[in-house]
Amino acid sequence: MTIRNLLLAGVAVAGLAAPALAANDIEVGSVWDREYHDAQGIRVNGDIAPLHYRDTVYSQEKVTTGPGGRTALEFLDLTRIQVGANSTVVLDKYVFDPGRQVGEVGVSFGKGIFRFVTGSLKNKAGYDLKTPTATMVVRGTKVIVAVGTDGRSEFTFVEGTGEIIPCGGASRDAQTGQTLITTPKCDGVSVGPRTAFDTAVETDVVSTASTTTPNVGNPVGTPPGSTNPAAGNNSSGGDNGGGGNTGGGRGNDSGHQGGGFGNK
Image 1 (tube, helix red, strand yellow):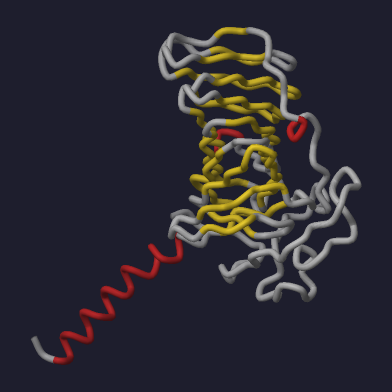
Image 2 (cartoon, helix red, strand yellow):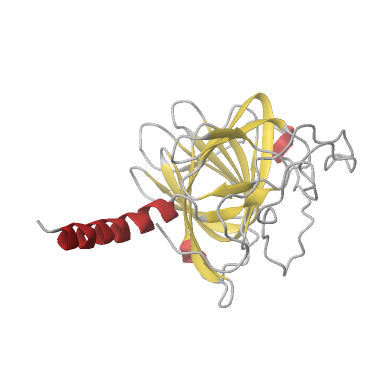
């Protein structure tokens, strides 16, 4: 093979590889819990970092909390997920067109407890929300999702309606105030009492974003300890007026800020 052919081949390979690398850094949103409580993000490339206020979160990132942990995430379309203690959630997929207010949101809830609030997506069918034993369809919803270590899942609809599709058996519509339950047996959906909630998901975490302004996450290139509110000590305290955020955030290394984002 000539040198020219080798160079052309190298350009072709680089062109194929670039989209795959960029897909690892698709921005989903950022952290909106002003206090840090034992929460970390595991990126698709294996990087692990604590999640501080306004740190950016990305597509395919796994968010975990410890025994006393919690965090709250807000997506670019204002979808919110609050995560309680001993919980794991994977941000599978994110596409958002802010001009048309349409997109796709894919989330896998692992063990733990979560508060999920739909955002500004006009196409509610764009939400793909899963637990180990069910898929949840939402229609303008606030729902608390509790998942046991065996995959047993509870869906308590605080506001709005939806549908629970179990891993086996018939699906069931959900009404406001109901708790729907699926079991590891994959034998359908039942209505029953909810278990006790973690205080981290009892009420909404208040965001500093307005209901019409997309969350743009951390300002691109903001150095820790500078103008980033997450870095250093946050004197404003937590969402309940508690202590500040100690320790710097990991910042935004994706180069994205606002706008629409493609899928992997």
